[in-house]
Every structure is written in structure tokens, then in C-alpha cells.
Image 1: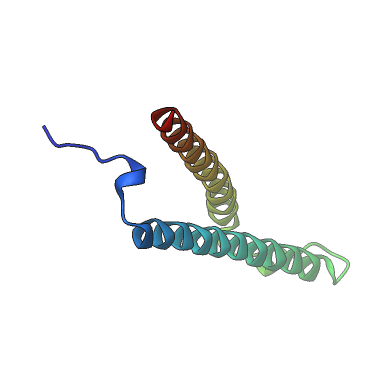
Image 2: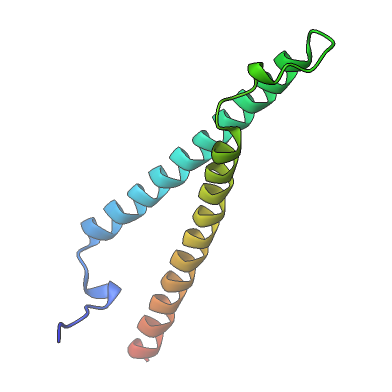
Length: 99
């Protein structure tokens, strides 16, 4: 059985690198969602611009893109909640061990 190290025993540089990567991960998913939303809105407006709805001007595979964009945001929120909960738990453990 392997030993699991507590977060406070990890090197500080590794913890900083993990948080920087988490922030970059957040930024990438938010940018992906924003770009998808803008492209989808633009395609919908373009397809309705002629006065008649033209489905050929919509994004290809728009249902799959919609699902992946919204799943990415949902998973990002869940990952952030779990990481914050783990951070608070580690701080609570560190405080109780210091007393």
C-alpha cells in the first residue's frame, strides 16, 4: 500500500505550480466557452439575416459543441469546488495539528 502525503508536506514550488496550472485550466475553458457562444450566436444571426431561416449556415455539429461547451463549464465548476474543499480541509487539518 502506498503512502499518501499530506498537502502541507509537498514542496511549496509544486503547490504553486499546481495552482498556476489550475488557473490556466480555468482560463482555457472559459475562453473556449466564450468563443463557442460567440460563434454560435454569430452563426444563428447569419442564418436568419436573409429573412428566411437557412440551417446550412449554422455551425456544423452544433449539438455536440453545445454539449461539450456546457459540460466543460460544469466540470470546471465541480473541479473548482472540490479543489477549494480540499484546500479548506488541508488548512483545517494543519490548524488542528498546530494546536
